[in-house]
Length: 158
Image (cartoon, rainbow, N blue to C red):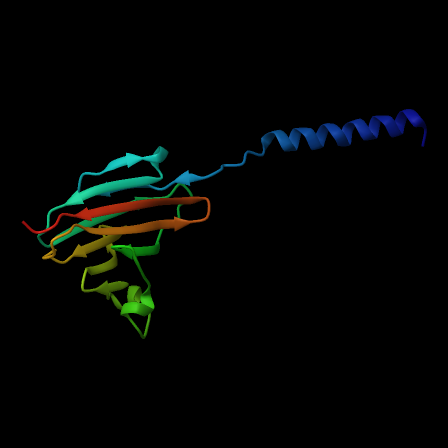
């Protein structure tokens, strides 16, 4: 092979490598948005944090999350007043989603995954807050590069 052919082949390989690299875009972190939400909320931290307040009475919050990758985002962490909750804290046995039972529950309330009108829906029921201080429920929807944190403050009893 002559030097000019070798040079030409190297230039072609280099050009193809550069062209393929230009098309790749790192999506970075993406916030999960809410297609529907039954309570008003504020958007903070470029969409990665949603905050809301609800009254001290029993409250039911309905969320329809929207993921850009098409996967229904699940709750991957939950804390109530700073205490981390997990499925093992409240449930045992078969998959609660398949059974139509709450995925998490406690004195504070419960969370269910449901299919309402063909849409993956998260239903959060907060029991009445009879304490003298606000109840803070924090959770994360999604994981990895696509997520959103939500903080719901249930106001203290009057």
